[in-house]
Length: 129
Image 1 (cartoon, rainbow, N blue to C red):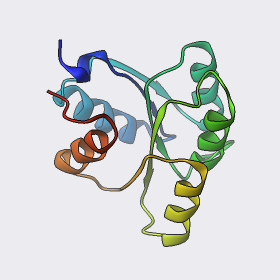
Image 2 (cartoon, rainbow, N blue to C red):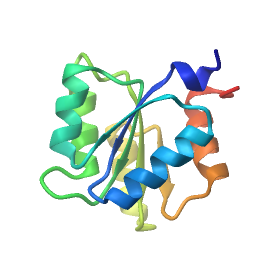
Image 3 (cartoon, helix red, strand yellow):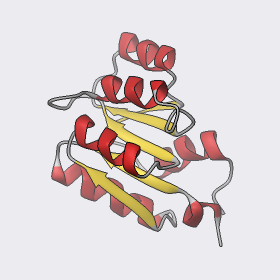
Image 4 (cartoon, one colour):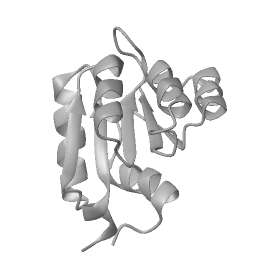
């Protein structure tokens, strides 16, 4: 069993298309345990009920944005060790710094390529194969 098959991933994005693209990319990289949420609040509920190893979250979402979710994940003892990659369409340096301060493991710009997605995940977990 590859490392990718063992990692439980939670995708949090308010856009259905983005969730499908992420899920497809992760599946191609060998991930099998993928859950999706439509916003940060739903994502946090899932994390509290069933902690995942990796959260890939969009930054800009209604209800609770990606930084709010990151902060909620990091302050909860059951979820604080989860790896967290934040996705953003904004190449905003302040956002990247804020995400790093809150404990994001990586920031990935949209649109992303399979190679960049793989590199962002491997930067956290090591080689997937």
